Image 1 (cartoon, rainbow, N blue to C red):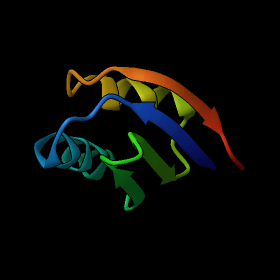
Image 2: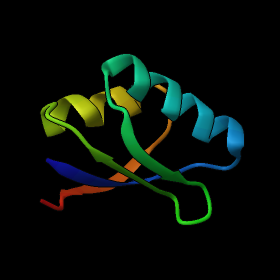
Image 3: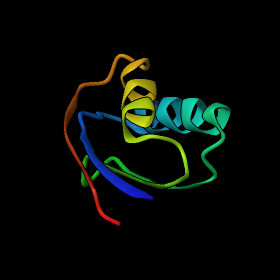
Image 4: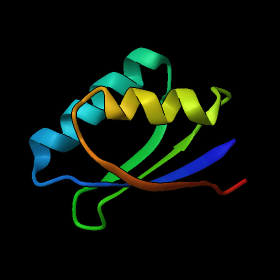
Length: 68
């Protein structure tokens, strides 16, 4: 499945924090853009689990959707 999230990120530190938690979750295929405030992941993990994992960084997930 491919998911897209709109996440409030201010800097590369925010990006790196999200990258770390997603990697720990086992998500290797990901694109994180501070400029677009966007996180796109391709994984077999459930949507809700990925969303909660991103939220654990303290970042606001403004919206999200399943792309595929």
